[in-house]
Length: 447
Image 1 (cartoon, helix red, strand yellow):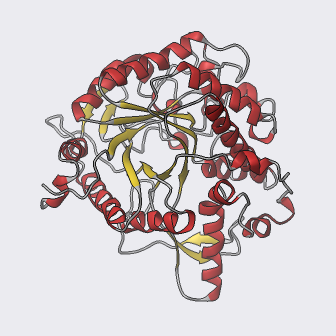
Image 2 (cartoon, rainbow, N blue to C red):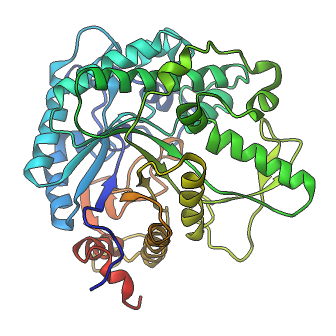
């Protein structure tokens, strides 16, 4: 059966440490900013104290991955689990957990794809300024070096996950940990995240790392709501703020010119030498895609002075994100046009829908099945048009803690009963398993 997916194309699923592991303070681990944030009254619906209990159930979860036929598993490392103070003496029991996980994945013939930072900064480092402290680039490089040495079986490394979300949600709007709302802090945090990324890549190269290493960014095509000049200008601002703010420095050694305009007096002058670190050569970019942004001018909105326009004929997920599969093709083509033939992976793609178990214990999620089918077809179209896409990771393997939204929003292809921790593969898991088994060939069949 013709599939149009190249040989070696990687099919996987993704998770993040604080969202699934539980046991955030067990076995010598230190608190993270998310541990602190979720235990602050009034900020979140739930905590990650138990979550999916993956810390204790990882072996069963790896067996589940193997049963589904996953070829790769993208997970993140809890920095404070392996370095309780963020620096200094490692926590051996934390390191041992990730070694066991990697060993189990390798034994199951599943490629381990490790993310060094998926938002859970050690609280001890936050007390020292966190991403606002320039020293954090060195702290992160030391942490990265420890993990590179400790986890030799990792097949691919990513430094950061979605730095835009870290700063927009955590330092500008306060909806995410550490919960700051400060216009002047956001560009400093963004810049230090990129410096840390670059320093980690340099440490990896210096140590002779052989596996590919890259960064993961969340991107969305920005589409003007109309052809009037104000909406076109707002769309350009939104594109610079979300899509180009983190990639231009890596590929071009400078921020988009629009950033100084967007932040005004809050935009600082950065030392030119910083970009020597930020431009460290990477092997791939991971792109997380969930939605497009139909954009109109809105002078009342912070930074971009733009807002999104609801589309009355579109389907929306439980997180109020528009389902727009062609946007995945668009953003992959945009990336290649702007940044060249760099290999890319779709490192997250998925949707939250209401999908309770049925009376017979199965979980029917036709909207998610349709979502996955349409988006993987859209990825295939980008491949057909010449984009060097090397793999696809569904978000998420498990229903989990959806950050500030708690357990109410379910992204998993596997249902989790959070009271019993029972895992139940949904129809979407069975569909995705067929996609993997046929190397995309099932997409040629009628839905």
